[in-house]
Amino acid sequence: MARAARDRGHRRTLHHDGVGHFGAGLITIRSAPQGTGIIAGGPMRAVFESLGVADVVSKSNGTSNPYNMVRATFEALKTQTSPKAVAQRRGKKVADLLRRGGASAREADADAALTE
Image (spheres, rainbow, N blue to C red):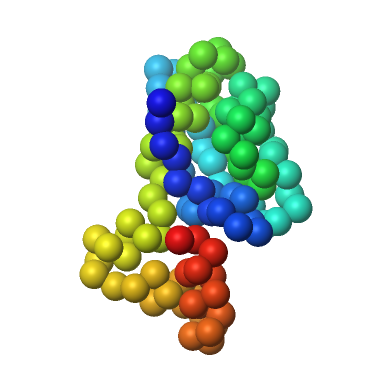
């Protein structure tokens, strides 16, 4: 069994973009805004639905073999890291990482509470 970091709370998407490669299969996964849904090919869609990821955009290149696409999807999901893990590695608080472009400290703290 593998663990995949995903954004919990109201967003139910991935934390950041990722690339997975297995055999001839190369896939790209991207986080998406709320309400986008799962935009993915059949095998990748099944993986995202089973994980509970509701908003994601993905593209597969190189193969249509469903086994390689699923394995490449798992490789891409293994690269996902949570803001909590990144904050620990950098020695910062999660709220400091999530403070984006003029966001107030209160908004950043609220976002940090959702991801923990």
